[in-house]
Length: 286
Ligand code: G3H
Ligand code: ZN
Image 1 (cartoon, rainbow, N blue to C red):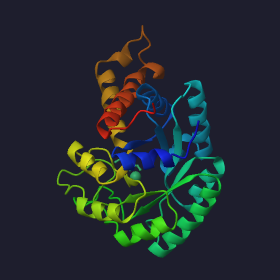
Image 2 (spheres, rainbow, N blue to C red; image 1 turned 180 degrees about the vertical axis):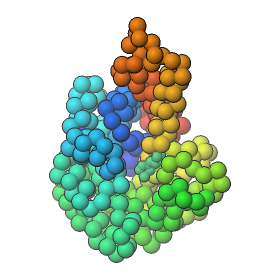
Image 3 (cartoon, rainbow, N blue to C red; image 1 turned 90 degrees about the vertical axis):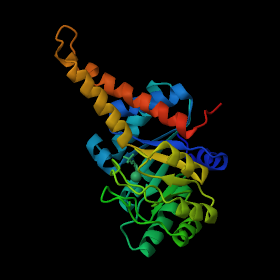
């Protein structure tokens, strides 16, 4: 069943653990993530970026895939289906399609316009019981050691007053692989924001952050950690091993069949997810 996740993330912030937000990229990803959640009995937030949704055939295809697989795999943990980094139009589309959560990412807009559009999305979403995440400051895009633009405490207060349920803050975090000279997370700013607002805070670019920094961020109010690249790397490594062992060349066992070729990579996603769940302290549902 789909839930909006508000209670799940509030409980996480209050009790100092985090719940992962995992991006799906295709059928195999979707199954691997559902499997990981089932095996750990933890809530699952499965999300899709605009790019991945395009790749998969659109937001409706993604919704149908997730709902079908939840059914096929007899899901017995709460699932949140979230739009990741959506623009205004995508957020409206996903609200209409019945996603249970949307991130409206207006960070490219002037902040006043971001705030106005966020209010509109909040209104549409809340009428339907859908959760809303906003982004303030800017998550880095692998452009330098400093990360993106730091979120301000003032913006945090204004966006929470606008009704957002979760807040993604630029605190030195970067999407993708972190540069070797990365400066690390800005805990001072995270603490100032966490002291000013009580909504669950979101850490984007969760892949590749050292464990001690993740733990400290959680202790300060991070309750949702977005992870995509980590699983792509795990998938790539396992698939490479399969191919380098020349298993794909095994004609007798049809090692070239995509159902076999993608198996090791798919399993690696689930394994990597279970590790994350354990060090984020994600609580099982019962
Ligand atoms: O919104 C998605 C995440 O922020 C993923 O970031 O690919 O660096 O893990 P990542
Ligand atoms: Zn992100």
